[in-house]
Image (cartoon, rainbow, N blue to C red; front, side, top):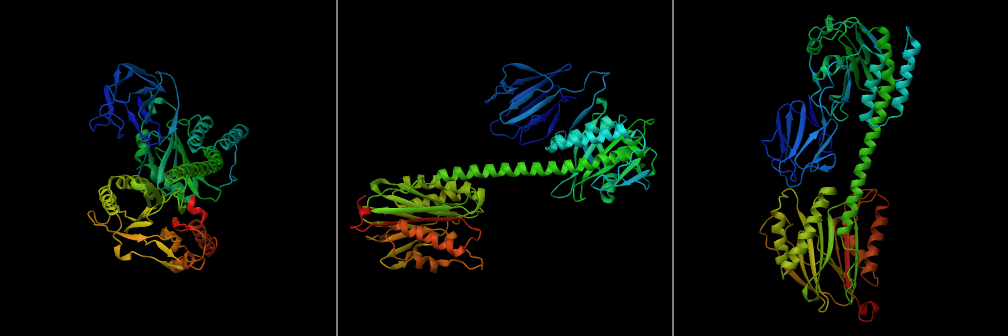
Length: 566
């Protein structure tokens, strides 16, 4: 039976091509529905004529590709062709080999999800033979033709040691076993899910193409092998009392079967490997069971190594994605503090993870004014960073659209509240600086008030004007309040990653320490900002950072200060 097998990263399903016309597209009525926005409602069709299959694009927006070439009109599909519709990729499997030819099929059960299923058989009580297993293979004993079969076991061990990918290891195991046991008709490998322990068929193999159908795997037999850590043999499964109630045995007229556990280096069972035969005259025997057990030992090690390798590859992929996200987020932040005559600026941002939800920005407004925005999105990590990127763009738009700071924040809150982020909120503080007049307009949306240093005195003014965080009440009326920034004055806007920085004793740095350090006599805002960073770093003394840290300091230089005439 011809199939389309999903081969891209977002899916692993397979579709049998049983109808004469099969439509692929986004519409629910399509036989193969592709839930991607770039896919057209009725994107392409596959038509069967006699034993041949043809693909045809149905006037889609983005076209249909076969083997990376855009098709026009009809294109015949040949075995192994790659069919691509936008980001969805399939491999065309053209069906059975020619009649009369013996062939084998080996594949991953995850690619062919209908080929192997676990069934709950009610079984009897007798096993023809058992062989206790260990993880080092020390039980292997060969009595007949030992040289040939021992060489086969060594060959399997060598081949598996060269393979790291689990998707390559499993088919190789079955291929090798079919070379040793020429009477084997079917084989499969079942592994435990690493997260929940569920039994999952992972790879299957058929000796003959006419057997290419769903394998019903007895959960009872697999659980027996896993629970007892014993390889089992039935010389005549069809008449074995243990399997008399087994639908999987009856369906396929299985005459003989062997099943062995796959164990890791610690002796924990990873899964099982089973082979069976329909040939009544070529049953498996005790020597065959010993050989299978001997193969299962290195096979288990190979599975363990492959799982570790695949886990590491997945971890590296995640780390690469996070590093890329970190670079993207850094690119969204200001490249450097603004240069404003008579003022000095300093900023710092350090996410607790690769990316974070704190952000700051400088936005130049008409009349030479500068808006300084600092915000803290609830949560941490990738989701908070995505929300931060969206909020940053919307803040710029709102400030450019509204002449009054309070109106801009009201508009930003309304936009954010209507964006479907019901479980998220944002605290934000906006300071609009008029450099020529030395005046500030401050709007606070549920954030910590800025620190303001005047002389040696440090205050946190404006608490009575602080409103709710963004996203709490859609139509909330925010207020702004004015401040004067005299020569020598400095202001610090910060997130709670500073005040809640924790040392090894579980003590928080706190607002009092922050205010005291900000009062220290230092020449300008940049020196004050670096001073705060050094003091917090010394306080935590190497303790892991638990929250994002964001700081913006700026101050008005004294007339005698050379910085005032930069």
